[in-house]
Structures are given as structure tokens and as C-alpha cells.
Image (cartoon, rainbow, N blue to C red):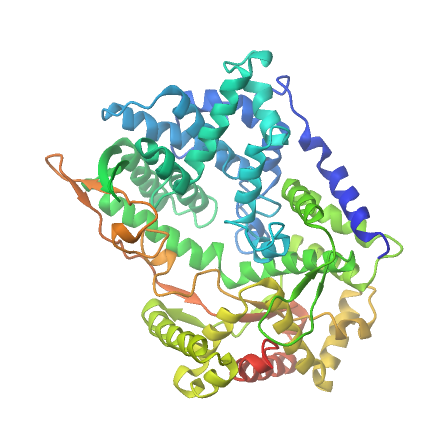
Length: 595
């Protein structure tokens, strides 16, 4: 598509311009707090964040589904939004701070305001369809391999540091003296530095250890984020009234009895959160519910298959506009060659982060309708339309694995990795002698380790698709499918556009999974951690270290998904299963990742 990227950037600018306005004339309606469903309500926190929450740059979150594509699948009532969630997190944060102060710890007003603002803004750069596009977030690595954290978090941190960013100007239009707010200009600069500190645990513990517990409220094992979304998401998905009441009671009890205690960490005194010993079971129930939600909702194979459609659509549109190209050279090396500058990649990432769900779909409709649009752009448009209309790809041959077996296989893979590194050998040659011992599941895990970037995954998809395309019986099934959907794309075009998507687990394939314990980092002695953990307050007032609360159950391994019409063709499914199993057993050479 000639001049494709400039056209795409202009389309995104047009679709996001209404969200980039700000001013104190954007006001919350009277009594808006009364109309909110909040797991934990704190009026003073809502009064502070309310005027900011109604600024267009934050209000756009009202047009982003909290659970992404979930409402297009098995849970059509899951239409709650990212905006209601961030407001809920701010409210819960305010309630937590109030409990901490009742327990005897004073929180200075400026730190309280910074923490409430950080809670409201924590998802403010969340892009369209929630977390659905995070599969492909590494394609926007505008820091050349130095991206530290999730893309939306990196974008938010940069926005908070930039006085000309839409986020900062929106906040200043409410809180500055010029707008009738309580902050002078230099005080606002200090406020934003505190927001960055409490939003970044490693920064907070280094510069402000006395307020590290505020950072834990926003990013911890049991934090305000989880205390809001666990009961909220349950209400709008599974929705068993008795369980909902129990989760709400658990969350409120935990917050009500929250306190702070000092711990020694690397020779320094650090203030950390302390939970009441009586709430240990409540914490376990909430984390158990979170684990179930990841398995059954957030990262269930049907939901991931729908997410992959949106991620692939974005990849195809960017390839059509010459944003990048896939490299065909052999070897486990970067498979993406960017054809645009770093500044342009950052601009595309920032604009994408401002799109809403509907604006994202509109972007594909506009680009796909252009006369010069090629097969990739038109297929991207079709993928978006089907995902939006509940016609998601169907998972094929999903393998689940328990944590015990996973940890055993991880140990074997770690040994293989050491051998590869020590001998300067290849994964292909080392795995060749281990395939029988690893079995199909072990090979799937090895495959997941090697497709650790979206570019490598795309290369593997292309390798699998090449095998399938050579089968005349499979091409006949594809032709039947294309005649049904009438996408306006020639059959020959699909030789290079896979109709098979590969999905890999979001979980880190290490021996300590995030869902296997309360701590999102691998459990280690305090001296080996970047930050200290919370404590429990035992009867009598003594503070004790917390043991790991085991809640993990199972995860899925890499799987393939395909259009529904193909999944309903028994012959096509038989071919896909056979080729997929042979593909997995073939090792890195078959995967297109190593010669």
C-alpha cells in the first residue's frame, strides 16, 4: 500500500482527536458516585479523582471492555468497562489508606493524593480490547530492546514524565491553581514524581522506603487492583450470588483490617503492608478465584483464540503499510526488520494506545476500504469483523498440564538450555536426543520457550502453514471456506496468509508460576528479592513473615486455532492435527527457528 503508514497514522490521529482534549469544563455529573457498582466504596477518594476521571483521555476507557473479547464469547454480560475498573481501584485504594491511618500510620496528604492518582491512571494507557493485543506488544519496541515492562505501563511512565503529554495536561487542567485546583505548578511536578514512584516498586523502595506500602497497594500480591477486579469480573461472568457475596465480604474484611509494619530489607528499614492473620483464608479464596478466572476466562483457549485474531489483524495491517518486514534468514535471531524510525514506532504505539475498541475496528474498516488496499489489509479487516461479531477462531488440540508435571518438564528444559549454552550447540541437535524423554508435552514446552517473540511465532506459523498448504485435500477445504465467507481475496493470496494461528502460554515457563503463589515474582529469600513482601499480623500484635499460598492448578500448552468453518470440517481437522503433532515433534528445524 503506497504511503500506507502515513495514511494509517492520519487515520489513528483522526480517531483519537476527541480523547486528546482537556479542561476544567469537563465535569462529572452530580451524584455520579451513587450510580457506581463498587466492591469497596470510599467517597473521599472518589471526590478527588472524579473530576480527572471525567477528562476525555480517561473517559475513553469507558469505551474499552474490561475483559476484551470475553463478551463476544461465552460471557455476553461481561460488558463492564476499563473505566469502571480504574474508578473502582481508586476507591479501593482510598479505603485501604483510610484503614492504614486508623491503624496508626499517618500518610501525608501529598502522598495520599499521588497514590489515588496513580490508582486512577494505572490502566489509562491501556489500548483497545484490554489485554488482547499484548501478544504482539513486542512489535512496538521503540526502545530497541530496552522496553522495561508491559507496553501500556511504559507508555504511561513516559506520559507522566512529559509535561506536554495528554495525560499530564488533563490532570493539570483539573488540579492546577489556574484551573481552580489546589496545586501550584511546581507542586504538580512534585506530585507526578510521587505518582511515578508509587507506580514503580523498584523506584519507591530505593528512594522512599518509608512509603513502600503505598506502592504495594498498587502492585502487590493482594493489591487494590485485584481487590477490585476479582469480585467485579466474577459478578459479570460466572455470577453466582452466594459466591459474589463471599468475595465481596473477603475483600472488605481484608481492607478493613489492613495495617503497616517495618521490616529490615538489605540493611534498611522498609514499611510494608501487614494483613490480619484472620484474613489468610479470605486472601486464599480471592487468589483461588483469580486462578480460576485465568484458567476459565482471562486466558482460556477460546478467549486467546479470539485475541489472536485481533493481534494478527494488527500485524497484517502493519506489514501492509511497510511498518516492518519478517526476515527469512535461518537461526534463532530477531525475525523483525523495522523499516521505520524509532520515533515513528513510538508515535504508532502511543496512538494505538489511545484507540478505543470501536475505534480500533473502524481503523481496519477505513484502511481495508481504500482502493489500494492489498490482501493483507482486507484479511485484517475480516479478522477484526469476525472477532467483533463473535465468530472467533476455534482452538484445536489444546493440551493442559498440571503444575507438578510442568515443573518437572521445566527442570529438564533448564538442563537442555545449560547444555546448549555450554557447548555452543544448537537447540535442534540437543533436543534430538531428548525428544523421547520429553514427550509431546515437553516438546510443546520447548517450542513455547523458543517462540518468545511475536516475530518468531509468526515465522513458526508460516513454517506450519507451508506444510499444510502443500496438501491438496487441505487446500480444497480452504477453498470451501473462502467461498462461504466471500472475503473478496483470491485463493492464491492465502499461500502466504496462514489461516492457522499458534498461541503460546502467557505464563512464564519457569518452576515458579505467577499463579502458583501470592507473589508475582519467583519466591526467594528476602535477600534475593528486588523488593520485600508483605507480613501477617498475628494475635497479640506480632508481625510474621508470610508463607506462600498455593493456588495454581493447570495451564495450557501451545495450541493452534482456525476459522470455525474449517474446524467444522472433519477432514480438515484431521489434517491439521496430524501436521501439528508432526510439526511439534520435528524440533527447531521444523519450526523454522533453526537450520
